[in-house]
Image (cartoon, rainbow, N blue to C red):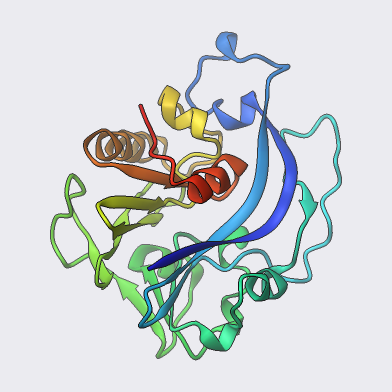
Length: 249
């Protein structure tokens, strides 16, 4: 089993008001505090099939401008999606399955390259995106409880998709079990790992109550299971993957 990161942007930043401001009281937010930001998605190579979790921004996305007043700056471009995939040794034709955590364009931007692959997406999110096709598998999480998650969908051996509603209405995340360690590829449950540690939401959610429930469920999972926490928008995730760092709460 190999888990690799597709790196798109680096050296970005986000203000605390963005990263934690969805639930942290305004008077506790430090207007001068910033967290490092990046953009990456992940690939799982089981040795039998290659599974991509999310598909980056559309390749035609222009570079982001670094404006001091903005709440989040994605960073400097490392590579567009197809080049980032090549940088880790793969091409679109190599991908057998896609797991889409949610509809936002930094996660779904290059779905168009994968008509040959099975695309797993929660039924709620698929309907919100209005996508259909023979290769679209609308997931209803029919495989029963997975640890402390009430529902799950088995994507492959030791790879589980579970609902993580709130950030978007049909948001989901992925857990990969390998050698006694759980790799949680969570999309945007948090934008920075400090939000997880502090039990705070970012400002980006469609349902705050569900987002808070999801965050609490994720925190419980991590307390009960050795987990490497892999996010989309923080370079800390890249370090955690490289160094096999178990998240501690």
